[in-house]
Amino acid sequence: MRKIVIGVMGPGETATNNDLHNAYELGKLIAQQGWILLTGGRNVGVMEAANQGAKSANGLTLGILPGSQPDGISAAVDIAIFTDIGNARNNINVLSSHVVIACGMGAGTASEIALALKAHKPVILLIDDTNSRNFFQKLSGDNVYFADSALDAIATALKVLSAE
Picture 1 (spheres, rainbow, N blue to C red):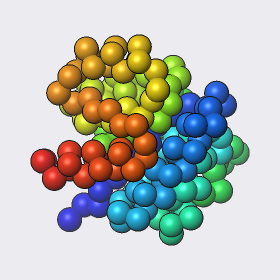
Picture 2: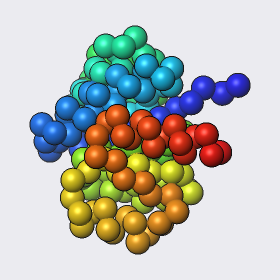
Picture 3: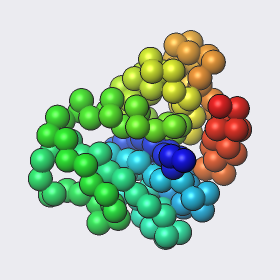
Picture 4: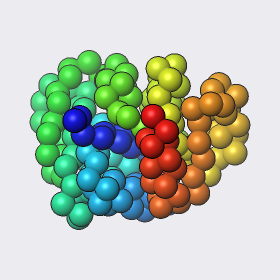
């Protein structure tokens, strides 16, 4: 049986302290479920925090990287996939995930959410911004879920996965 892959997407350099805290907790909780964590693999922002959280709980991490070289990769990535396709890797991120959790918001994160919704993937928004929540809810009400904490996001992921 294929392992469950949970994608955690979020801002890099512009991640807030709240985003980083939530991402670390998400990574840890994903690992505790025995799921594989998928991120963009870089050593900044939500990607780094989620990977560090997963490693703190002995989880397996998968990084889908935009370039062809190991510079900028998180030391907490176990399996690195070098794509050399830049932001086009966002589609690989979402298509390889059973559930996408957006932790914070940025342009790259918004593109990943939109691609996930277009592919009919469930998306859990762990973001404070009401405008972003409303926008994505209007795009695909059936596949958009909201969470107010990492624990809430994992509970929602469990419900979504059990319904599949």
